[in-house]
Amino acid sequence: MEQILLPVIDNAGPEVKAPSRFQRILFVWLPVRQIFPVGIGYLVNWIHRIHPEISLEVLDLTRFSEGEQLSELSKAIDRFSPDLLAYSWRDVQIFAPHEGDNSLRRAFEFYYSPNLLTRAYAAWDGVRMVWKYRTEFHKKLRFIREGMRRAPKAQVMVGGGAFSVFAEQIIRLLPEGVIGVVGEGEEAMIKLIEGRPLDDERTIVRRGREIILGKKAGAVEIRRAPFDLSYLESIFPGHSLYHGKTVGIQTKRGCPYGCSFCLYTYIEGKRVYYRDPEDVIDEIRQYRDRWGIRNFWFADAQFIPGVKAVPECLSLLRAMKEADLGITWSGYIRTSLISPEMASLMVESGMGDLEVAITSGSQEILDSLKMGFRLEGLMEGCRNLKNAGYRGKIILNYSLNAPGETPETLAQAVESYEEICRIFGPENVYPMVFFLAVQPHTSFEKRLMREGWLSPDYDPISLNPWTIRKLLYNPGPLGELIARACLVAWDIEPMAMGRVVMREIKKSLGEAPFSPKGSVAVGAS
Ligand code: B12
Ligand code: SF4
Image 1 (cartoon, rainbow, N blue to C red):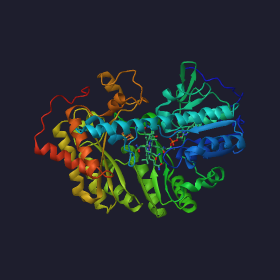
Image 2: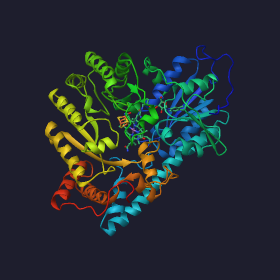
Image 3: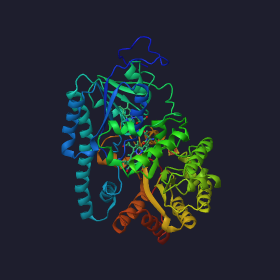
Image 4: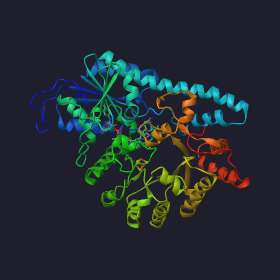
């Protein structure tokens, strides 16, 4: 492991607070679909607690129109004269279908529609969308390059969710000298600020064609990480954009599960670190009282990451209930660990809509994806919630056509949806149909490479339609059946298509017994 060479200040061990090498740090939130910059909030609080002598400022590019963003960046740099420019890059999803974004629909129309006109339109619109994705991606690179040009003496650092996922690709597209950070950024920033070596942090830098990676030794001690919203306000012009909206709060970091398609463990690590309920509640109160926030999203990779996490979750929920916050909250939650006691506390502490990654209706498929839960447990948790008086929505995330999917397992997916409808009432259950998107740094990606579905040197940020087709994993004849169900659903109910997809799949499987023409195993195209 090579050390990243930065001037090191003598005697600056972790126990002795070293003087800061930087006086003015400008955080730049690269523009994304509007969402509160959770990570920047924690980073500035962390730095301010340790180095209150440093001036910090947050520039949120999302609040400016496209045409203004570059000039606002230049103005902020000229006015603030940062000596450290810290870019936070949240989303790079090359292909990120969501409500209001037709990209998955167009892709399916292009690949699967029987109607030639529809295919031609999808091809045209698809090219436009791909161009948009590409432009968005390159725009962010331009903001980083422009920052370096405008503040040539400043050190530049980049981090954030999207950067973490595509760091190796992005760092190659940036000038030398940029320090990238994969995953949590608190300690890496403090070390840089204090001039300590960074080679025990997950840094990534480029020297010529060579990429140098650091390896993180410890973890950020977030147990006591108080949050001061008034400080954030004082350095964050335009924060009122987020008042009254949903805000993300992290209650813990890390997830011990190893679901084969998921890269959250790559980003956050497998060990779980918790924050004190006291700090979490204090943070919620500040947002509620100062910004009128009533809806929170616990931005944990997984709210209940395993049996060991249960006592921590219970004490947070108990504290929330006692604090009687008058809020609603949500997050990614495994219902398989929801006991009757946990269910009551969830309801009483204000749990709003619930997003559950059921993924498949077949235990065999769940096991092959290494999901680490039993379907009966998931159903049991749902019953516990219902008995505890839960009345919110249940959003059920399915990833259909995983390796090993057969007409029988597909029928089981529909049955599992119907079972949950029986528990909560169909009007409360919203199935969301996804596919296993292949993500870098996952065992699913490695498996597909081994099996020849993906080439080992494929480019995860490519916008080539053939690569996109491979990355939206939906192979074989079942893929066609599901895609057609999706096409019907988009026509009938574009904003809530999951229910129609379930109905259509059931119809297709039931009406004409499905006889696969070939194997649906991984590797089939
Ligand atoms: C919670 C979450 C959500 C919630 C957010 C709720 C909310 N109100 O905040 C919801 C469900 C709404 C959501 C939606 C989406 N999400 Co999301 N989400 C996450 C998740 C699980 C955690 C993000 C988070 O807030 N973490 C907690 C904070 C504290 O961490 P952070 O912001 O990353 O900051 C830390 C580090 O990144 C770093 N850091 C950040 N900035 C900087 C800057 C510097 C200089 C340094 C050194 C370090 C640094 O330090 C920070 C503190 O340690 C991540 C996956 C993950 N485990 O990280 C995906 C993730 C960020 N989401 C992702 C995506 C794609 C999306 C969507 C686009 C999905 C979609 N198709 O609609 C949407 C769009 C969001 C939007 N812009 O509107 C991707 C982004 C990467 C990518 N592939 O493009 C991720 C990484 C997941 C993935 N599959 O790859 N998401
Ligand atoms: S439980 Fe959730 S966060 Fe954890 S590995 Fe599985 S999918 Fe990822």
